[in-house]
Picture: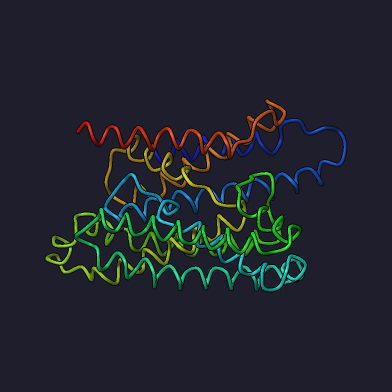
Length: 311
């Protein structure tokens, strides 16, 4: 199954690169398409992997990092940065150091806030979910307050990073985002067996000798890095990871993270590359992929809730 998904992704990538190439400057077009393809694959891999990791930590397949406020935390950081140094100051910052600082700060804050939350609420999942949602609302409220008191022109800069757009990609960040995502994937792969034990629950994991607290914090740190990478490239995406994780569990029918992690990454890349190819090359940008993804993800979220209640 994994090999088949890889073949589908390779075929879509080839179609994305070569379809519609005219007799003009092909090298220029191929360079632009390669950069956008790399961004789509990086974002898809980051979102798919982060969702699987977070659902394992939270012991709930209905949750995504966005629901618990990870994206809201990133938008708050961006809003505070624009409010303090302005949009022109933000644009003047070197891309690589800013990107590294954002990931480091995001990871540290997420580990402190959500790590403490999950460790204290490991036996009370409803309280953990409620607290995470409240924190997300608080982050969004603070971002909204800062947006109201800043200059409208500066607020337009904040708006640009508050909504997902797969057509707006910071190509200068691609090498750094790719490196950060690759490192996170390697670390997640090395944790895969421990994550299998973690998914059994706190008490069984402790009885099997798993350092439960350390694995929780490590998984949360990886989630924070991956979410910050995807958000920095295209903006916050709420429900896409939910679709990918649901497809990965349904298609693979295997609870091992050594299977789920690559499956979710491949499925996410197939959906993003295929969806962007459809909307951009076939429909002439008649619709926006991010809007369709969020709508479908919201419906899938409601389906999971109803299915859970029926059971």
